[in-house]
Length: 261
Image (cartoon, rainbow, N blue to C red; front, side, top):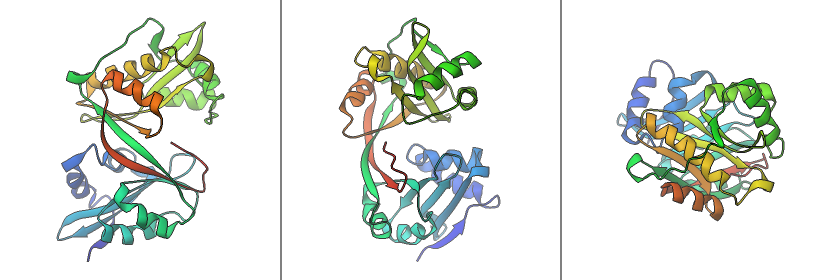
């Protein structure tokens, strides 16, 4: 039987060392407990001084973002530490039954996790693309995102582009597509926030934005990683052009938020 412990300052290094065996699989947990513990709660299942699973709850977003990993026994115990409602959880397919038993009204979407390394990458460059850095860039990004589900203020966009490398495609002084990095580690950057305005799709702008952030990632890390809904074939084609290949599946579990990957 595993014992459950909360990850705190006194045991954080031990847990981090356990996660280092597969940083990419555990990339959110590995990053959050080290670099954003203020917004992170994590419980670990230990047996014979080995990590058998964990649940991580990240609380700096609109809704808690939860990661559940481990074997079935550990997951059944750890799921009791999940929020009661309105959160998004990321799980391996093997744990779907555990989550559905606990949250029968949850909606599940299969995600492909994809990875590229420098030796397999193909970059597409254009003078339409540049890194977003200043207040005017943030205003244009907020205008783009107002067309999407993320209605972010220019101030929040400015904070985002200062923290996370972000590239935009400009047409007539307007950002029509962008791609960002959610977190940065020497082992890998997690790419996210990829979006192209519907009026400007199928023109290669998404490819340019993702190519630019991927190139920046691979200058600084061993790999770039992203996740995409498995049925989003147009996006997957873009990622494959750049060199990304599927490495695993995970499941996005929506509990009460009405959000999708």
